Image (cartoon, rainbow, N blue to C red; front, side, top):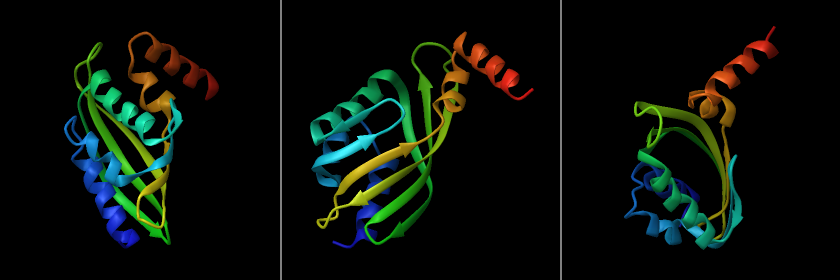
Length: 143
């Protein structure tokens, strides 16, 4: 399998993720893959699977839109938008913009996944009470 095919399959997985498709992680990710985002740092397919399953518990209607990708050898970078509705608080659709750095193994599976996004700006500022505090701190830092 080419790394281009692996990247295409990864993008398709994220853009069509659902509770039913989370089980496909075993095809996309290696058994000992690592995963890191602003809230998690885990290793192994069971732990990564729990993160994606938990996403569906925490938010409603989560979906990814990958806007661009770059592939060099076995390493790729994906820019994306993550849309969701909070289950508690404001029910309007929210959007987090971020990027993912992945490395594929020789079999074309993801062996390293690292997400980059600003939790303060993209998430905390949108929450009641905490959002007001975050905006106040941001304003104070910019003066």
